[in-house]
Amino acid sequence: MDKYGFKLYALCILSNHVHYLIEPIAHQDLPKIMHFLNWYTAMCFNRMFYRTGHFWEKRYYCDGFPPTEQAREIRHLYYISPSLTKF
Image (cartoon, rainbow, N blue to C red):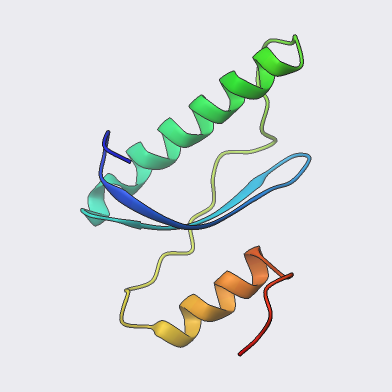
């Protein structure tokens, strides 16, 4: 994503919330990234379903961790994308 600079590793859209596994280039940009993603996806879904107003249930929750914690990253990836085959 060019707007704030981050890598998207996994995404799971549910009926009232969404899970992202992202790596921001600058960790202090995470609140801006989440605000943008939630605003943009809410706008798209509202247009798709011909509705207005809030789309997502709550403000985002962040469970941040450093990229050096690879085991934690893999656990989050399986949680977000349970259909992945464990290797």
